[in-house]
Length: 221
Ligand SMILES: Nc1ncnc2c1ncn2[C@@H]1O[C@H](COP(=O)(O)OP(=O)(O)OP(=O)(O)O)[C@@H](O)[C@H]1O
Ligand SMILES: [Mg+2]
Image (cartoon, rainbow, N blue to C red; front, top):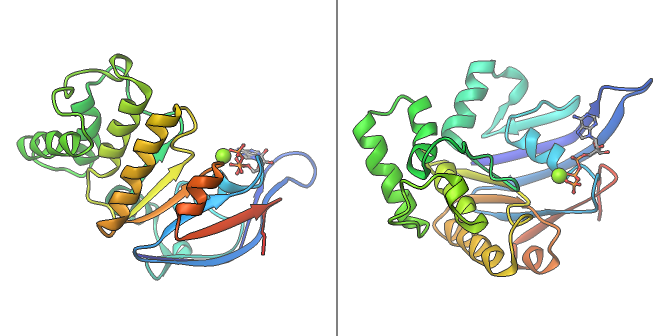
């Protein structure tokens, strides 16, 4: 796993000149790192995470994911990399409320074409891993915030990714649940996963091996 950003820029369309969200950001992330992305609201953290996660494209500069310039990747190659190499965790969970916890975790494996039996066995074992044994059949609305985020982490792990991208994963959680979720992300990192996490929490950022500090679309020294 490797990430290389070089003079990355992002301008959202709108107004006469557009809205610059990133103004020339360069850094590298190596396999096994735990990186916290910090900075004030509107400084470009989510924009950066979306680009790293191949959910959005930069408007300038260069981004290499696993040594490949993303400009040279087809849409299909990008979707495949997203599905197989990257797990996403969001502040608002982004679970499907009509599906059970187990079915939510199955979804990425379904998209990847895994056999139904294998998929369910793996989903159950991932839910077990995140401490939700016995809650496989509950829907997100029958779970607490912390439990929903655990389901989201299990789903992020479904296709055995190399990289976890978490955008304020504790933003909707109380202190105790936040701590559990963050501990879980650190434990996954200890197992070898690369983790990039946006956070406003100074203590959490201090625990990360490295911080990327943004201000007004630029890196803070
Ligand atoms: N889809 C969009 N269209 C236009 N402007 C956008 C869009 N998304 C973000 N922006 C703008 O880009 C800038 C960076 O937004 P971004 O969401 O990356 O900030 P952030 O650091 O994640 O903030 P927060 O901490 O509040 O989540 C902001 O000025 C925002 O208004
Ligand atoms: Mg954001």
